[in-house]
Length: 514
Image (tube, rainbow, N blue to C red; front, top):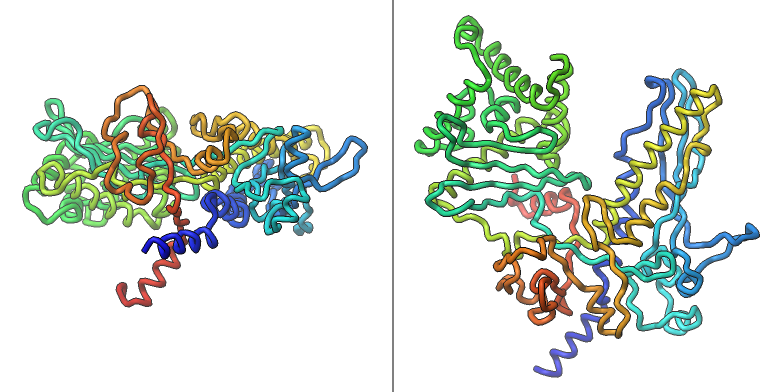
């Protein structure tokens, strides 16, 4: 048994590297995600659509450096460390400026900036070199890679732990007798995160039981109002979509009455309307109510447009960001409501937030994706400003002159060099621990929880049974970080996400879905 066990361990490490999770996710980021971010970014329009900037394919060139005399030479990690340089690749993006009523010119390659490179990734010079070649390049053949070199210092991005996205998490607030609970979904669509929170609480005097909050809508709004805006217009539709249980239906019927007072519905106005007109009246009233929240004091037309835009783009964006998905979102919220009511009536247990099924780990590729999206947005903003300036001066606009490559470069470099990430998180990238080889490996496999260090959080710091085989039970610091900074077990692998279409097709082939 002992012999075969070590044989198994050796076989595992013949195939997998200890820092595989970082390298693979970074490769995915470089090969696919950067292009996706560029493709879904809104095109730049100038002079009321007179000019449009279109983007094409991105090309990333292996690291080289420009010397003072203008000559170019390849740069390897050792040289970057010794000369305090950043080990980075150069990015070139196809762009063209299209003038209205004129034929589109050819794409031209524009240098948009540098991307710090992870050692041993696909575009790194060290990729696929053998032991002798690594020694010739001045590298330690045992060095695992998986970190960056910025201004000559080695920096590792630590893995971040978070609550699973696109999944309903139910939790009780206070004691069972308080009859308060909350359902939360962190909806993620190509990096944009929207937290939707549905809360059930006893109203003060005569209020609404079920209230929902989501991005760009100040405060909370009654759930019934949102369901109406999404197309579940009549009382019957709302009640039957949420539940078949009579007790739940009664609770929702009370909510509907109070919500209708908030909408200021006039029963006398609805008497003469046909069924279809009545539906439209109810939907429009709900959209106007949300419009008054998101664009107070604007014209009615703008308020309605803004409300529809907020519902489509920021409510459950992972289900889609166009108006066709509204009915699906309504069904999703109705299901969520029934689950919440079951928690209140103790028919369903709330979720355990510390259960590892309800957690996801965000590795280098995911964190770099967040960073690149924000940096690329600021580049496009800067470009449109530069183009508008040259148009105002009466010059012929040129894409090459409008791109200031240091905007993107500095944004990304600064975040990795300081560890201050987008979204206000600090300490995402850290100076690589080189005290010993074991220290380096341990640092590359660290997992950090986002919870505050100053509060007790006893349950979160505990060793949870579901961490067995995934998280090391011994390796965690003493003091305030205890249990919040963890380490992956040595033979644990982080699986990469895959496209939902692939999984759907497999399920269909198995005959599970009709």
